Image (tube, rainbow, N blue to C red; front, side, top):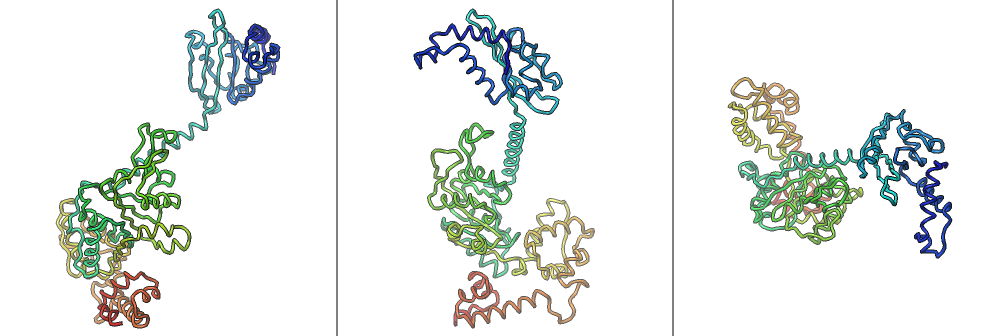
Length: 495
């Protein structure tokens, strides 16, 4: 690469006069000035950033290939030209050289070229031995890609903060025990078991369909326990991006990664100290984090991202899911060792269709609560309640509560009747005309009859609830609950 004669003469003079240079001290010999000039040029030309060396009047003495590519000039032909004549077609601003020359201080700025490439430009003054300005070294680094990375990082951090705002961090909210309606024997037994679990500090696994009330029972266990004075935090393992989940659960240390908060961040496990952390939808937890959660459950230690020392928060873990974790173990998507760590105390929440006798009380409480919210008062006819009781509610209690709120708003009269119910609900409930055909069994009752017969046959054939459960493809706790529901407890005991 050619250079300006002024550059070569001046640098050669400077190098030649340095007989005590570092090269001479190391090797005991003097390297010819020309060779050292070649070394210096090789350093400039081999740099990954664009480098331009100007004299005090902003004339280009030497520029490397990267600078030429970024600004659109031929370094071999540009030596000796004024800097402001270069990069004109790309809108490069050389005023930084004037600022460096005027102030004799280093200056940095960010420029965007006409080609949308973003550059970080720095200028540094180099003084001669007599204190005069000898050179201005301009460094040009492309940061277009870095801008994209930082933008994605900011978006990710914002998403994490938004996700955290959706976490049910509700230590101050007290559960009204009336919220758990358990007039049916099926749900009353589950509530009694939950209160027994509250008396100890073991990990609890809540199983049940979406909307069945797993979060409500988790809160019941917390508030009935010795930890009721501490926080109750909830995180949905499927709502936060996988790349941020570890930092949300376990936190990160100061300076753990670029863009991290300079003070670090406390994870939810540590925030739940002396309280309870509900890991909702635990089946959605990534495999990599399952290992770290398992380590915490076994050792009680939390390692924040980038931390050099572990912490030992005192927190009780409750996990919940609507997925079949044992099937996931077989498919390799959930760790068996973590499952057995979580499955110390298991509570299976029945779907609403299995305790439909609780629907009238649930509707009554919901209407009373909404009366204050929407400033309206509504009643409901017995016929409408019967129609609701015959509907299977795939969304369970959550679907029922949402339906009641909709009826509270859309019903024009003071009383909700069968005609106000959605047609799809009436069709599925067998209530298209508002009444059943005389003597015709409902779908729910027919299914219950078949279920009861299958359960009794399995208990008679296999003698024990465990073997019957294995044969039917359900859990033993489900067999025990349904046996109680259908009055088959004595049948299983007799066997």
